[in-house]
Length: 124
Image (cartoon, rainbow, N blue to C red; front, side, top):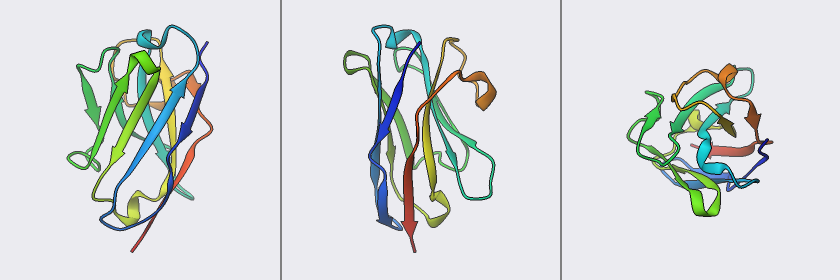
């Protein structure tokens, strides 16, 4: 079992940057694939990015490729999402998630553990 706590959200102008953090409990952090999803008002929760156990493999949604970067620090049991060149359409609640399997799947149903979310609002 792992518990996830996100932080780092906020209000930023278009073109700005934010860094989200996700701190995980437990000593087995490096055995979880980590991912970020987001949910905008009235929309389904969608995949943003995922990272493998040791950070050597990543996967991104096309909408964020080249602007967002996922990373992790296993010693700190923390995953990160760097958000650059933000757009108003990036406004959403961002959720950190974890799964035991090694495949970087983009489907939310494959992730067993979720944080409470952190709000990102991008003004135009």
